Length: 288
Image (tube, rainbow, N blue to C red):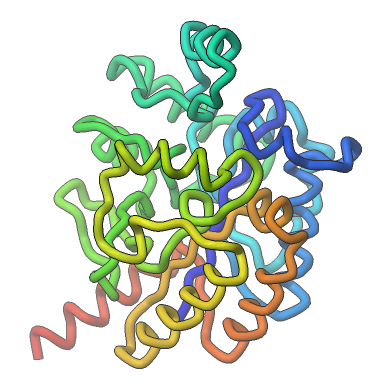
């Protein structure tokens, strides 16, 4: 069983990969529309975690995704943890590339406001309440999950846990479905992520288990994803895959993604909001 996920950001956030889209008429949202249609071609469900500002600023572009039958929309913060002015100045002066987001939500109050704002714009634009969430940049603190649970979120996908084949119930009451397949963004050479950039980044990289300590060409990454998905399927687990629409496009214009979709189409795919049933089923089996 596979839960295919992706993250979508507003253009005004100016994340690094957006600068490497050669066709300036293509926004990240338009690329995400093509991503959703490609998934639809292979009859694959996907969960796209979207920043609230995307719904506020680029709603007309986003409408095809909102109306897609096989797409679940989840929250990805409202503002996307924009970089501080100091970070932007440092990057400009040094000529280096800084991370696309802040490393902190700030105060409890500011985090709560951001979550509430995200859920409000989703309800306004989509006409329904969100129940699934992924923190932008996977940045969360001791308050995040309690805030989300109190706001009505039920499913979270922040955990990079390479050895967890099943979703699990967190103390806050959220169902966590860990990303147990090597994710794309931090492990593919693409856009600004050249071998030289990655070599510098690895000095501070916190994940040391292979293959997470390395980066690969998009083709090599696809081969690793294939092996990991098949291994989890053989265990009867849930493979949660993160494939950003923007990364898939910038890396090779969806070529590797389409190969993976052909593989995924052989298995059952589910949305993030369906992972709770797996937890309930395992709990019931353990009680028998």
